[in-house]
Image (tube, rainbow, N blue to C red; front, side, top):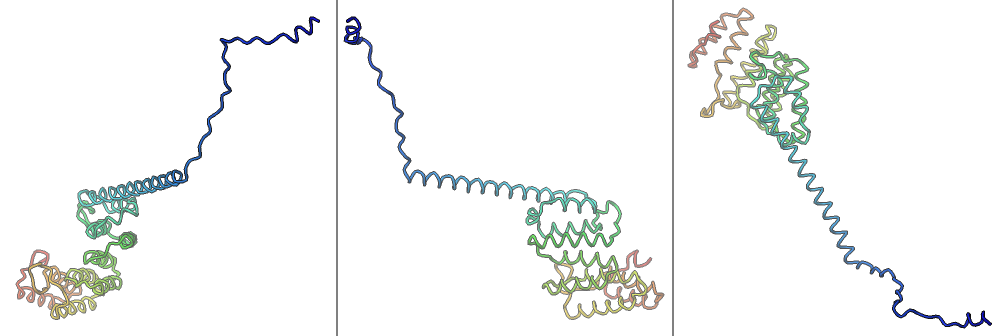
Length: 273
């Protein structure tokens, strides 16, 4: 009986104790498709902006590297070797910021005849010097620099100093075919090279006649800005005089001296010596 009473005893609830409802995680609504598309668009825009910023940073670096090189090239006193090394260290993409005047100065300093590059004395160009200059010119042309008369002059000068007269003449021909009318300077450079070799006296005389003919036909541009016609300068006469003296043709040398004075050119100490 006691067991039955215990089983039938009603359950007593405490009215002050409230039932805690079962907590459920709130349902997460899916993102609208338009929001997802906007998020992808924003991500692409951010990536594009990041790429543009990176390209702009690279461009600024390349330009600054070129400006640093140009400043040192024109204001510093780099030797031939230092000029070559600094050009090689210049990033390839920076070379598109070089002007023709910068390329020509690089060629002159690499050749070693620039007064600063020579450091008080003229360097002696070698075949290795020519190789370096060709590399500089090739790189500059790939960067978009167009050779001018001074570029061609440097290439004529290095070949003439190495006694590569056929190559020097080829560069002169390239200069003319590019539409540039040469002054007497490249012809004088060739004349100077020929005049140092007595065995080249025939070529020296032929070039001298060619210079006179080209001046007569207006194929050589005036060296002076205010001049209307080209003339043979005292340096060219000096080269020809030296060539005739080296082969013992003093009669022709005196004739050239008279011709020079008739043209209004006064012999300097170099000519008299």
